[in-house]
Length: 69
Image 1 (cartoon, rainbow, N blue to C red):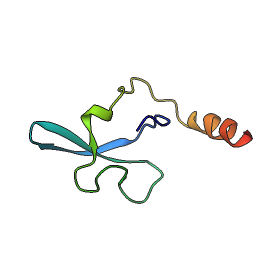
Image 2: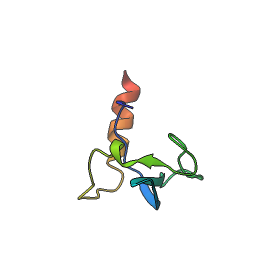
Image 3: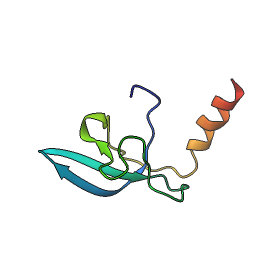
Image 4: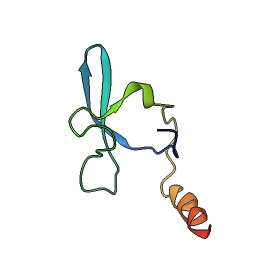
């Protein structure tokens, strides 16, 4: 939707009418995401990149800075 990009783990992939949808879940969230459609997930057109590196806890920096403003 044009907001702040987030990285969540893909838990399942659904294909419908030739379009891929990704069911996602944040590592610290108890339930799967329901931003778009709770059963289909995030459409492939909303994917803007693929993580290539994992640095544990680095996301806390952006949360801290965002809370300052």
